[in-house]
Image (cartoon, rainbow, N blue to C red):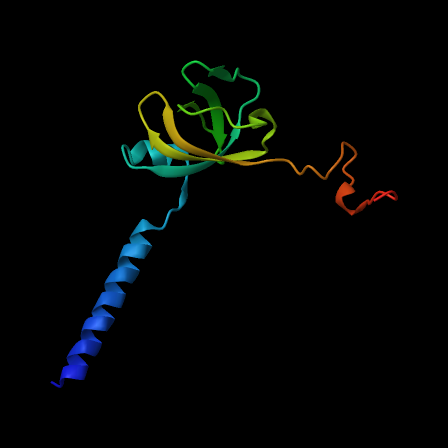
Amino acid sequence: MKRTQIILLLVIALMIGALLVTLEDASVYATFDIADKQTPETVTVVAKVDLKNPIEFDPKTTLLTFIAIDKNGRSKNVIYNQPKPMDFERSEEITITGHSTSNHFVAEEILMKCPSKYIDEKGIDTSLIYSINS
């Protein structure tokens, strides 16, 4: 084999290896059932905050505990040891990344999908309304 062919084969092998590593690391949204089965692996769960149950936050320890309901309707107690995100109770949906234990889900990161700040209580999009004075 020529030297250029060997180099080309090595480059192709490296590209295939990089592709396999990337595909293995690609995150897929899970449910709490999947998170329980994959303990202690880190998973990402899309859920809603259960506003019928108390949301507890201790500012001294920055410990936030709440109950989340996943897409399948299963609820689980979530513990987040970071400051409570702003407007947490108003979020339509949350994406929590962490791992599951027997009693709760330990969140390492919470991303919120907040309600649109441009929709008023009547459902009218106010982002297109401009002030005459501006």
